[in-house]
Length: 328
Image (cartoon, rainbow, N blue to C red; front, top):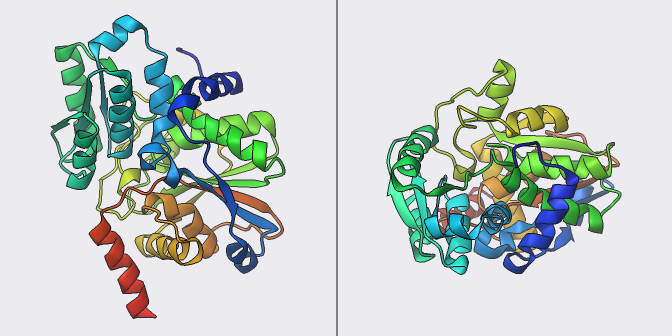
């Protein structure tokens, strides 16, 4: 597919990937709604998805659409962790080779998770952009089939299935708060949601430390940013120097943008655990963080945000919870 993905593509993806995913629950967060004045707030629990993150949707849609000859060659990707894990998982079930390029910046527990699923890890560089350069070199040298993390119509359509599921359960949703990094998630969800209901408002939530997509929007072209350590490490990385799809789609479908700090993200993680007894990695908590800290006016609105994943080092997670208890 060389064109921008459509709602029809997202529906096709939903049928294609059904054997490999869970149609995750959407649950209410009544305390958060009360605190923000919203008419209702719901959480889409992709933290309970297979492989622990939403990324399996896009990876499955791409890999399952390959021809038998392409599958025999094997697949390759670059990732900050969750997408690599998803590619390894889907490739493993399909019985094909998967190589995942990571930068040295990616936490070792994420690399170990990829290896545990049968993926081959290739580390090089200090940033996502440098890992992507290595990926291009290996793609050429090994003849593998690319499965990119976000800037691919099949991957975007796969992530768009989340929008279909949300609106099938909550058709009166007014506002969607969606994580923004490379843009595959928000592009897919926003495209699907606005195709169903053009009046829905989509807010992209970015890291204050490394807002690569926001800087690219300002510049009107893909713009690299320094990768700084973040508790939301799966939102780190650039949007790709040859970005063709997510940058224009974010420009088209996303209405507003907000930034969240490290402290706000950690507070969101703690809130999700305390109120819902769910483990949310830093990236998963940014929507809740934005709501908690008044970044979005949702008074009287029906709001949904996605808890995108649960991949976090257990020691780090426990320290965050303990620190919050001690601060209280």
